[in-house]
Length: 113
Length: 115
Image 1 (cartoon, each protein chain N blue to C red):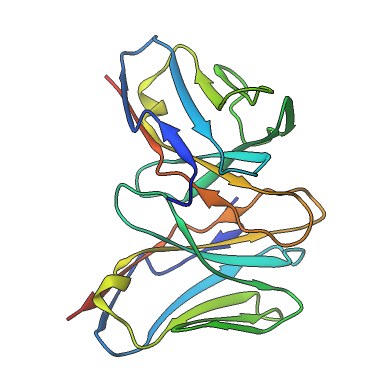
Image 2: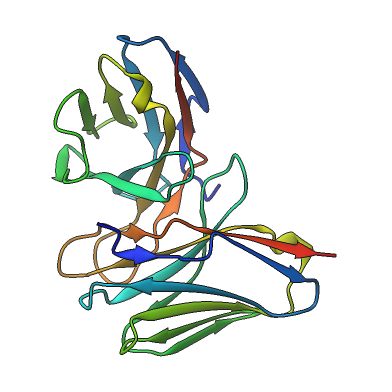
């Protein structure tokens, strides 16, 4: 039962352009959402998060958008840089059922120089 | 990677042997989580522990798998009588507390290979 879905396994973007990574979820009780970035042979690194009381959170080149009615989350990276090439996971949690995070299957981003 | 230390980084076992994976959380963190990543899949939650307590083990297989987080020392994920299907990357994460919205910080994982 995949409660968090990333339907695009891969994405290629030209350096300097915008990268948009998408994530859909099924559980309307999720109230905290995160994006992690993962390089090969390393663990996921926390990137940015958003609470369900907001619809946008920005941190430098990274912006996360939340559309609760559509149960959709997206991460925008602009401008994209070659060092952004990695696998990106979205994750979600319901605060009233403990601290278990549900992860998507990841999107592999390649930024072409 | 964010101060969570996992060892070993790579572990090779033969079928039927035991595997022990260790995780030291980030300094000041009292909550530990274990995840498994199978090839071509995302991270799957296994277990959530605090010191000397298992809080949520809903993602743990019912047999052969166990986890502990003793008062002193690292958290241990133990897999008895390993089978080929246990080959995966096992990640540990930690967080400082349950209150509020806190991200989990991950270690670099242990890659378990079963011969």
